Length: 531
Image (cartoon, rainbow, N blue to C red; front, side):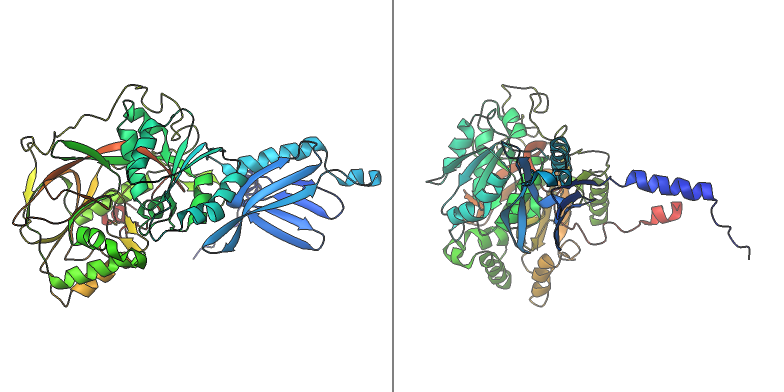
């Protein structure tokens, strides 16, 4: 067997030069004999006498010189625990107390350039000082939203120098009016501190405006989780912890999100989360008296209703776009691989074919980004309303024994509860899940456990489709529960259709923080053959 010769010196030198060019340069300043600060690949390294510390760039909130230029201040989100961050401040003198030590301090212009570079590296594609309209619901979930806001969130926003207008809601539905009447040119984001009820109201308030399309695409919804479900925060930030969500908002990017029109009777409203009839709707709405249980009340409600084997017969008509699970998995794979994301350790943007995140692209801060339609209301309904004749090309799906009809726009419905494994934030589809009500008792525990271990998608009891519209008509039941984004609506027929990329939310990385269907990233047979 012949031996491969080592690379030539010129090749080795070229590789070294390429590696050096690829790695970002380090920037250092000296602040006296014993203090130096260095910006590294993914962190700020601080050396003080014999002590040193390293702060991730993602955790840096702000850096600036004092008005007299004598003090450098760095604000950052200190990791108190894996589930908690706290705004913390570091201060360093930039002027020597003893004139003989002046040479030990970097000059003022070098310090100013260092600060500018630190801010650029720390924020990457994210917008700084997002102008926030904050809505706090004091009664969200088990209560305590005001304390969460004041102790865990507000200090982080203030350390990031975010301008804020703060309102405490006083009654259900007030956020609809506040969003409808807000000056959208005065703000970049609206921050509901609540469960998922306030985001639902905010989207509908923006949707009620004469300039609904512009408002929905200009104002990004940035959720602080204070309720019992907190699905929006789980999906866009990957956490239901308020201080972690606050940091994700500071460093996050505005990202388009599909919204859904719901027509029922002569009413039209927007949905961002889910639509449910059957077990899930009852487990959510039928356990309001158990709010003291927090997120566990939902699990309790599902278990008790599965064991009863209750069915919810209905007529179901669907505009099916992707029917087979393997095709759904492939669709998810394409969406994920073609989407640009923010690499949080270095606060840089990866390459992708679409959804370029950052201040120059997905942050809708201009009329052009919002479609340039000042007077444009909601998009017209492609398939009409629930009262119109059934559109051509829709399928009737057997639903006489359905135990759970559940349609979702995002993956998580609560922390660690993933019903829609293949959902994508802006793929132009809803994910429709149906499960018959007569699930054998022996298989019921496995069905429930699959929701928590990310295998619900592959459970043979689950039918999973990508759809763009549906109409559902309950029958053989005088009353029951229908849930839209966790909110109860009348028990009567309704129709839904998706509007691609109509809304805007702040996300941590420009995508949805969910793992996706199991093995979505496995090499396919065709790729193996082409290798």
